[in-house]
Amino acid sequence: MPNFILNITSQDDDLMLSNPDIQCYLLASDIDYQTLQKLVHQISNAGKISLLYGEKSLDLISALPADGVLVDLSKSENIKKEMSLIRHQIKDGVLGVICRNRRHEAMIVSENEPDFVVFKIWNDGCDKTLEVARWYNEFFLLQMAIFPQDADADFEQYPCDIIILSPERYKIFVAKK
Image 1 (cartoon, helix red, strand yellow):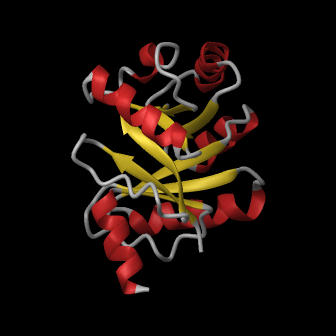
Image 2 (tube, rainbow, N blue to C red):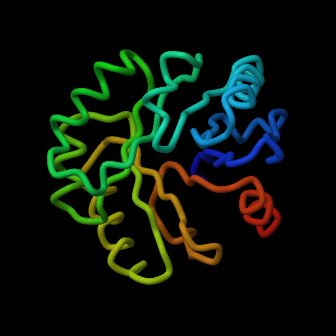
């Protein structure tokens, strides 16, 4: 069974901190600053990992004691340069990178050694993404995550190490098992 990252987009989301199967949280950087501080503190006190995600994540990483960031480089034309700048900014923090669902971009991202690579999946085009994910899983040692973008995206067939889900989707997934 893969590991899970809970995608927290609101202060009202259930963190499920006592759940031993959840060790990492993705916090939307557009949550208000005081709430983010509180969430990072709660997650840290539970001995778990907090990652910032969104447009303000790199601006907030030095102010908040979050463990790292998930950055979306799927539109980047210079992945190597951007990853170098991000690594410098987050220092020893955890770096997850969302890349295009194409082999070439996945190779470039992986050559720059993030902690994990993320493929977003939608219902439309999921066959192509599944093919890339299977290829990636076969050739790379870096951890791979999938991040379903549609509520009913079929992510269970993906050969991934990590699944990023909302608390609600996580509860539904676990209830099915």
